Length: 343
Ligand SMILES: NC(=O)c1ccc[n+]([C@@H]2O[C@H](COP(=O)([O-])OP(=O)(O)OC[C@H]3O[C@@H](n4cnc5c(N)ncnc54)[C@H](OP(=O)(O)O)[C@@H]3O)[C@@H](O)[C@H]2O)c1
Image 1 (tube, helix red, strand yellow):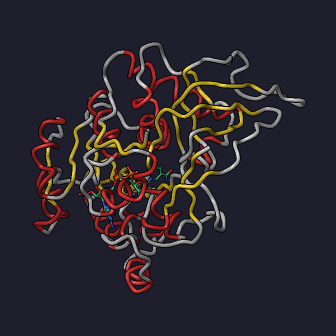
Image 2 (cartoon, helix red, strand yellow):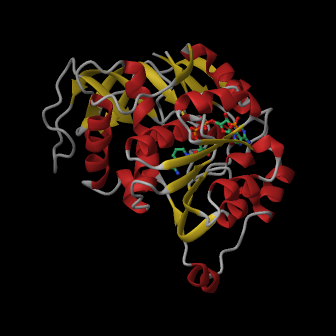
């Protein structure tokens, strides 16, 4: 089959198309014919070799797909996942790597039947972005109608998911993005769009929430974690779930930029957390998927909201599998509004 292989860490050009052996599903796995691949920011960092837990090259990147079940190999031990999956089912799945390919074999517990009528592109765009946002805001954050949430990169994949979920639950959103994305934020229904390129984001957020927000969602990292923390009011929760600032527009590894971002990161003082009455929450969706029952119940709620028309992935651009490098450049250059996919 055709797949994108990373043979050495580096800039997007290391994403090369190759013929590789077809995957052979093991007991307990499902073979999926891939229709659409979700490109995640983590893929960029993994390609650069700066993401914890990335395999050594060569590896096939990619963490989520939607497609058609081609084969189900029953488990020989304790069965996991949806036992009713069968050949021909339309499914969405998170994949521990190997998604940038024509076929992928995935443990059954990571494979979810798509609701009737859901397009493959929506299936490939919904799992990671919407579950990260949902888990952060409602499971860990316990946000309630009327709460104010600061969402950074509100025009990105997770950002749009967070805004849509927040709107559906009656939250007030303050969303940041670059200047070219401000009109989109307004159309998306962000209550208070903020152009971070104008500086003084903390002052602007405080204008909209003088006593501080109930939550800040931050995957930028570096000094942004400090600024988001400053935006919190009493009971405020800072969700830290990524470190985009470690990447640059060229997609090349830059130890100076990484060191600067790390040095600018705040060190949280437990006594100050008590005094300010705030929390700092780390979120890693991989850990949620590993907790039986939790991911499924959150996914059920997200799919219910999708079926009710309350949320809908925004697709920024679709590239062919062979154009994976261009897809990564597109995200590095911050051109994406929404999710980038590969066909
Ligand atoms: N912890 C978890 O489980 C989890 C799960 C999913 C995603 N994440 C993290 O969430 C973040 C967003 O992921 P995503 O897949 O939805 O990506 P994304 O937001 O769709 O794409 C990148 C966007 O981030 C912004 N950005 C900020 N700093 C950037 C930089 N240094 N280089 C390029 N873009 C930068 C840009 O928007 P502006 O134009 O607005 O700056 C850009 O358009 C990433 O840090 C990712 O690792 C974490």
